[in-house]
Length: 213
Image (tube, rainbow, N blue to C red; front, side, top):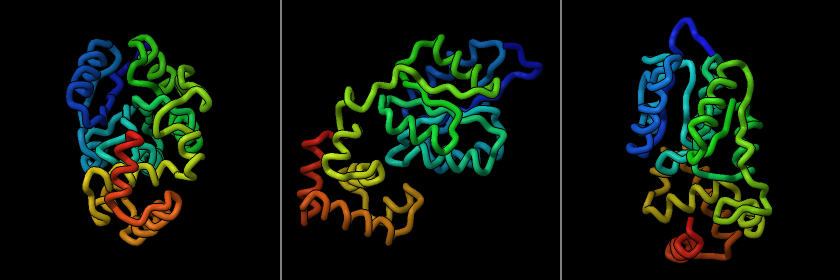
């Protein structure tokens, strides 16, 4: 695929080593160049405004912030920009959520270089690229599986909030990170405690630790 002008790609990932490795890989390709690297969610939209990338490779979890929500806002505010989720979460539920809101691709971080470049090329060519390596819900393990969530009637958002609580965040901090209101977070917390039959924060933290959240 030949471009008259190099395609500008913005990397959004809070793991510095991975971000740097991805930059080197992409800059080795003659048609692509990394126009910027972002490590925190608060820097994403200023970077978009100043750098005007053609494509964004977006991590799904930026210190507790839901990258899918960020991607949804990007394609709403900047419809010309392509967004590919690049994540370690091999979860069909998250892939389908990404597809449903109109993101252009979903790739695993352990994908081969060939697959990554194929995904980028397809998306830049107007197609969508969703990794066929994503396993079915029945094959998944861990706290983000459909079975885990369904068993406890937890949503992905509630699992996010549990993780942030475990990490010591206050309601105000959680609201800021997830771009939700303080009262919405309070409601989520009330629902979480009700669903899990827990009354104390210490019990919730213990639950999160035991279940690897």
